[in-house]
Length: 383
Image (cartoon, rainbow, N blue to C red):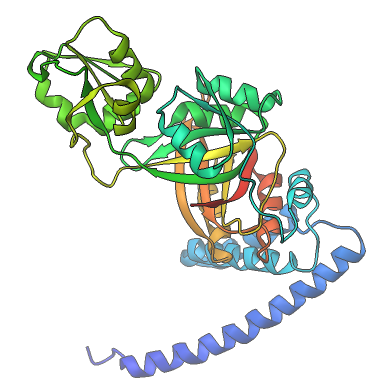
């Protein structure tokens, strides 16, 4: 142990080295600014992938057994340089152009009225979300999520309300599939506290239940309660919790029940036989409002993206590093296999950011240029 240096001495050298690194980093960022000015004057894009590969290959070659760490360090430093250059060079991609055209004036407020499509029937949680977002809205109920997206895409309605995810049941995959398929934009998000109840006809005996209807998400959210029935009761998926309540109300069989909301009990003349059936009392569903025309309202604080990464090691890390470089909080990251592509995935991401923040448009521009698939779903406000 005699040859081990004192920790204070080592830390002193680290402090000196850090100061040298800081000086060099600031010098490099200033040079990056000069490069940005040259690129801007000559109409060149920020991203130069060939140049980046050349630098990283040289760094890796010179770094010996620390090549992995050196590679990541320089990758992050280049991400920071590009973010800084973005303050001097307007990004030049179709998505960025669309975003700029979608920005609404600072005095614009979100509308309280409009024609709105949502899936289900009266009493559906999507209808509750629509009423919260559009207090004076004209709500139209559709049979399916597909019909909601078609109504928005075809201009039949101005807005659509669809559930995106639940705090205990996870993402609504059918909606994510439709977001990929349709050219729509998310303009608002609304969280709803979901309280499921077991409903039956007045006078029906809860001990004689034969069938329970509900939406598949609600069935998952009440799975612990449903286990008590074992194989004695048939659990039947319905298109919507409100439609499940309507089915019970219209059934000639008194021994059927639904998992629905308390408002559905009042709406369809049913009684609550159990009001504590959800796995969690803190059960929220997030609904999003979609439009055909992209719009970004003042105060937008969340961005949703769909993308695929190059099929190579570290590809996802490279994207996450870009968020880290800008100090952006990633609040959702979900992957799904791409049909027909072994071990390749498409990613759904939510980040806390605004396109008005420094470096964000440059980052979006770079992602659009480097990702195999890239879709900007919207920059919006969540309540």
